[in-house]
Length: 267
Image (cartoon, rainbow, N blue to C red; front, top):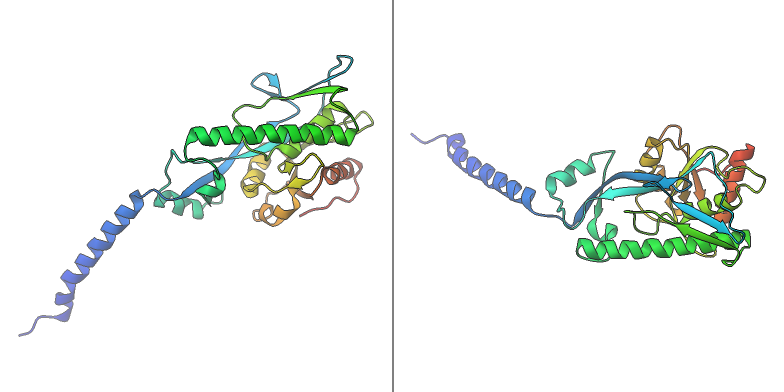
């Protein structure tokens, strides 16, 4: 009597299953070169951070800047770092989550292999961004640094992506809409984008997560670098208007159109 083929295959299949399970268990423990990101904090650049104004302006006569009814929210993402290894289960969850994103680690942290190096790099990038923001704002208002002193303070946030919102905040503090009102028209306006001294707005990455943070914190308008419109619109956020910008002038024109009820570009 010969044995059943099914009985002969049984032990082999059991061994294969055990090997696959062992491989999956090992794979689940191996650190992967990815970061898992989620919506981060937002900060009103027209308001305060830890009890101190984010933007302080002082003119040559010692006068302070104007106050605003609306808000200008700079947005961030929160991502795992090199000191917090990401493994396969977290990557899989991130791929299928609408609230998170899986990104190559070197795309989130392009410089530095440890937390201290990354922190120093991001701090330097933020300082350069703030300098460019002040330059862009004063150039737009045709003011010189001798006529006004601008100080920007924001802790525990790095990188260049708040440049556009800093620039708009400085303009709002100094001049508003030019006729006594706010740039925002009393709205909560969020946004992201790098800024150059000539007013050019550049892309930043992580926009879909930043729009989630903006909507969560009450924004109704989101200023997004035009090159990232498609990314920003990947997820629908009811009540959040996506406005593409490429320059500081374009952002100011869009805000003016929102205040006046005129046509506003959308993504």
